[in-house]
Length: 169
Image (tube, rainbow, N blue to C red):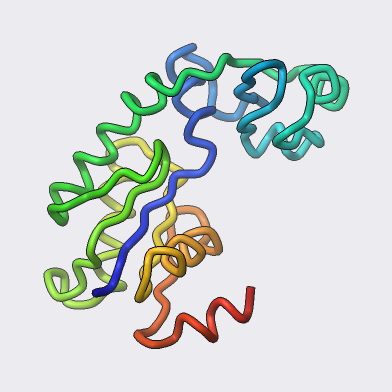
């Protein structure tokens, strides 16, 4: 059974910025117990990293928007993403907010590449701009494939190609 993983990086920050009605381009980080849990690209560009203390993160990026951790908010904000993918292929499993898995719907769309393109397009049309898709023989490899994909793109590991794909990482 082939697996398709849809990954929306930095989901906690995306959900928090939308809730605060702030731009997704603002450097921002979600903190719990004064430690950075998740930060977005603009914050990473300024030197902010996961695991940093609040003080260190703000020293590296004085404009850093500090947002509170809220797992319920993150899950609620991810529900529309789940619904969009569920419409394309029933049986979606939410692994955590920002990451989901489903059986690869290749035969329904002609090919796995077409299925990944359809999923990306559907999510972009609903306003999810940073979406990446990975398809492989197993969940772990599919997630790694999604992580190496470009924004609004996908990586399809050929059947039986997981060992060589993972070796390259």
